[in-house]
Length: 214
Image (cartoon, rainbow, N blue to C red; front, top):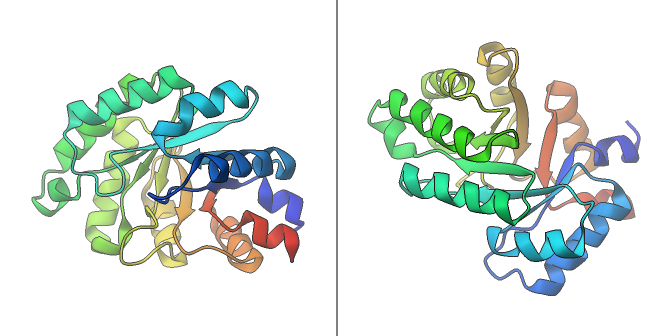
């Protein structure tokens, strides 16, 4: 697969707590140069990035990275991000709901954030490294019923990132209108191509620059 094609799948990502302004602006300039699908940046930078890069597709994160903010807080965060100029929202589920067997609450939370973002793209991070296959299957239904656009594997801050087995599991269990985003530990061109070929519509990675320069 050509590098340019792979880049078109990438959410060019920088979410480290120590990310400074110049690093974020450099990321945005790279995204425009490489023609990536989006930049994925902390919510605190969204407004400034929108003002400086009016044509850029901006993704940000909600309830990140642990997911245990209340539903009301996540909905407010999401609404605020959209007002500031975000085009796409990647929210983290409450894994405590999952471990308590309250998949109804997971669905309700996804639906609440869906209402908050309106027609903007909503991706739901389920953090696969902490889940059983049965929980992942049930979460595919939650994501589908909650009205999200994507199911996403990982935050990149958990104990492990994306793997191909989970992509195959998602494909078997998500609804027809739900796409897949893989993230966490995907850095090489070969890895990116493998996940795309497995069925991912997006790749969250900080490795775009690596594949351009190699």
